[in-house]
Image (cartoon, rainbow, N blue to C red; front, side):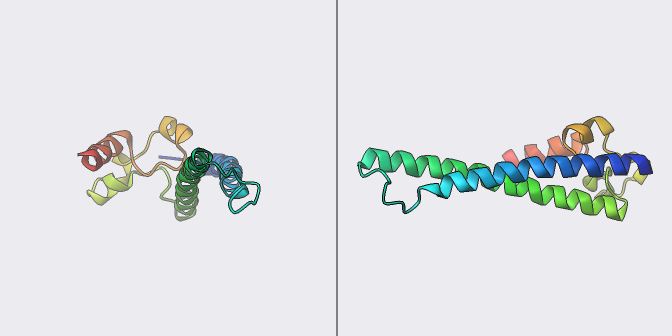
Length: 129
């Protein structure tokens, strides 16, 4: 289980990741929309296709960043509630809090993680197949 100092550490880490992702998100959306409707846009069909592909590519990354920002906000909410660091899937399955702990090593790598490794692997395999 996490201690009060751990909550403060992970709150700070989440805010750092949030700032980096927010900068990336803003850069990607600005880049994707920069030349949209610009009279200096390329007129050749192949160039138009390339620009459309690059714009769509940037917007997909921005969408992924937006999802991560939402997950970070949820993680910050879990800190406020005192449930941060507990596997949501284990808890939903009725495991006691002492057995539903997400390891600190996982939280250091993915501070917005909702599930322990085994539950996340199971979730991903169900989603893939």
